[in-house]
Length: 374
Image (cartoon, rainbow, N blue to C red; front, side):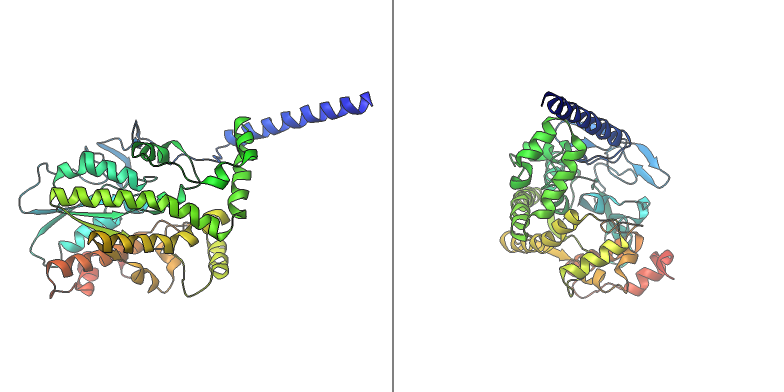
């Protein structure tokens, strides 16, 4: 009996040692089970978690100006003849693996300045990977409205949903500032998950966390996403009021998706899983969240009298939607995808400014974007 007890104890000790060793080995190799949203070299910020370090070349085609915005330097105060547009959002606005002039805000500026609307347009890219709507709200209130924008475009919501299950320093920074609590109830409060985190077995905790999300029902996932989007809606309302007070027009842009809504969830999963690296739990959040975000934006548009711009039709019309995204990525658009987003937005803005003008797409493609032609 004593021998069996000793064997059990030593087995337990050895198993614990192996688990801890494996845990730290995997972490040392760079796998982050609960990653903080970040993009490399930046500076920490007490409220935002982090922000871009200004006036520097990040890579060959990326420049961060002195205001911490992506792109060239701008004049402050702006020229009286300039119509200034500020674009807010996460990595899809910032632009991933595309040069400065190939992000959708930069392409939007080129389109608007080439279609004869009678204004000089200046479009500022204030997006940043990992930022939630709370980050956009804070930057608008404390920094961007001081730049006297005439129009504010917000394409947020994706990160609010994606981080509903991912509690990290960056996502929590803005939530805390606006009193918006982390909402992933069932998963985050699972007892075993708490024990694994307390024991600093991060790798096992990450694997179990993913298992819990995958095992949640459709209604449970939708409930968690809806709670996250309630915070998003509050942030958009606050931004709309701030813009109105500052004399700027706010437009909400629906984030476009790769999903084919004419097909069901299993077919979309099979297509994406075959062509992209995507975890099932991430797919579930996006699949259930896409229509919820669109519904929230439509409701906000009606409540606030704000125009909601939907560019999904342009994405859906592409012969192969996979060709609109960078490499093995189902979220971030390449130069062609960014062009379609920018053109969809430009169409709405142009029709608001000059209802009878229309936007000459062939002219824009031929003259302004020859690199998009076959």
